[in-house]
Image (tube, rainbow, N blue to C red; front, side, top):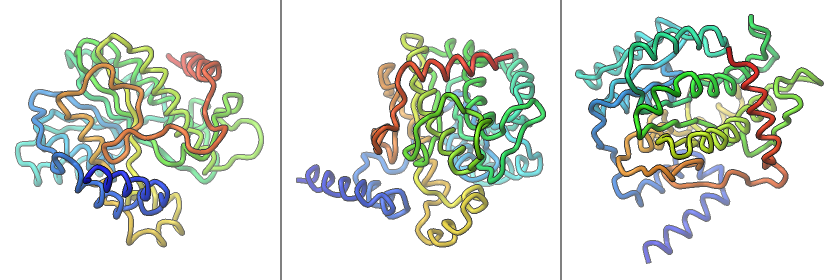
Length: 320
């Protein structure tokens, strides 16, 4: 009877996604979880989180550190990074947390960081690719790459590639790529990944980068098959974050009373990172509120396998 009731509720939340994606959806779903409060021990685990200075990234850092993990997070802002560390250690006095200053829009910055990281650590248990940008106007990086593409897509690929020795050496490592509902809105255009042709749309560039993250996760899952590394995706829902308020101010103002807290948005990330009984074949899946979800909702948004390969080859050509 409980399962039937749960299924009816879930169908309603998926149909009325503007409720399901917001805080009410989270509060309803958590009533059916086996353990609403995550208390798995991550003592001795090494976790790397990108974009850990605010929003979902900061909440992920604090959640993982609170479970005993050694957490390293990447960001560009020293003051915000130090604030994240202070806040985390106030909440969890024994937390092991540090940051590295990395510009994820620059291949050179990522390479410099990873070269040092793989010499310092023997393994990596969890890589959370969370950082992302939403730019209203097109911006080209000093390396000549469109910034949304460089940060939201290429950086995910480079980190997964450069840190491969540490991930494979673990034997049970996890890559968690944070996407968003924006990926449901568009089909990947492999002939215009950086919006070099035609007019630039910040919303479309962001949505396409999120669709690319999904396709890239599927490709990495296949690559890591039988190598002890799972690659999955997380949709955090609509969360009250600085990036949302900056990117979509009118939407943010209207929806603010209903938005999830960063901690609620990070819940599934922490659950996926810490859940001890994760098995190697639980990979290439999208999770939202601790449940597997569809990768496509609208018609003609799925990327054919041949085009996924084009995406992979395009990214590989940018590896330095």
